[in-house]
Length: 98
Image (cartoon, rainbow, N blue to C red):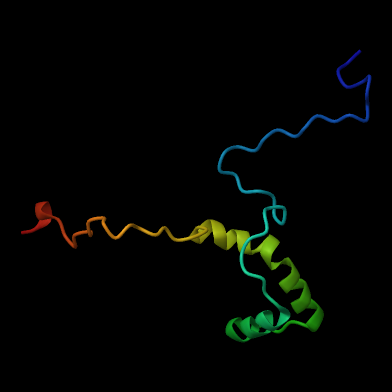
C-alpha cells in the first residue's frame, strides 16, 4: 500500500521555505502603524491618484499585512541605540590621504 493511502485525509506538512525567502504576499506578520482611510486620502494627494471610499477602507485595512512588511524588510524594524561610551567614527582614514 502506498504511503498516505491508509489515511487519504492526512496531508504532510509543507516543506520549510529556503532561508531568506519572504512569506507569500499577505501572509506575513502584522507590522507597522495602524492607518485609517484618512491617511490613504492624504497619500492620494502625494501620489496623485483617486480612490473611492470603499477602496480607501480596504487599503487601510490591508496595509499592515500586505504592504507594511515590504517596507519593514527594506528599512529594518528599528534603529539600534549605541552606547555613548563607544568611540566616534573618523571621517577619513590615514592610508588614503595624499
